[in-house]
Length: 217
Image 1 (cartoon, rainbow, N blue to C red):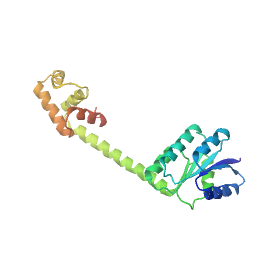
Image 2: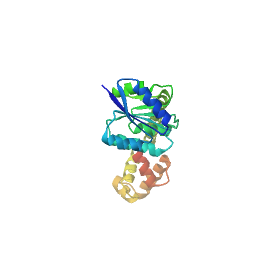
Image 3: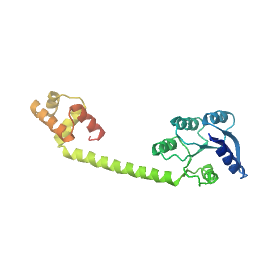
Image 4: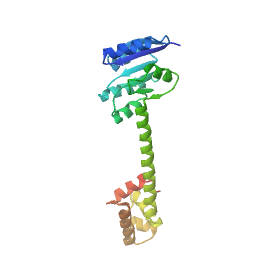
């Protein structure tokens, strides 16, 4: 099966080198090269390529938006991004656009990456993979910390205070709370004050927001 490729990049020499590299393998055919991704998008409307190799510095966030737009318009195309960009936020943004391969090392054979993704695989440079996995680990740690904090908040409140807090989230006043739980207004006010102190918030609105975010009910 012949795999067709578009090559995109602002540097002519890089496009020539990539074209020659792919053309040296009989199962790959470069059917066009473009200075920018917008020209490539126009070409895709007439002749669809199987793979787009996009070599870029990713300095311009508009390029990332263009990759996203291209993938949305042509969801079946396989996109490989080759960039020495080390900004982790830009890398994550680029990966979120639906690219199938990200190369951050010039020593990597782009044809071998193409072999993997054309078969339905996914390829990440080792630097990028390490960052992604460390981000997942950080996310897991933060999630566990948040769950522990939510559990601590809930355990710090008495059952009565949780009942009052729920009424606060429903927008009830102190007198309405008092009627609901059959206590005096002063007692209801005391419960509210205790809740604000334990949740470390200044007012009822903050208490309600924190209770909802912490999923206390």
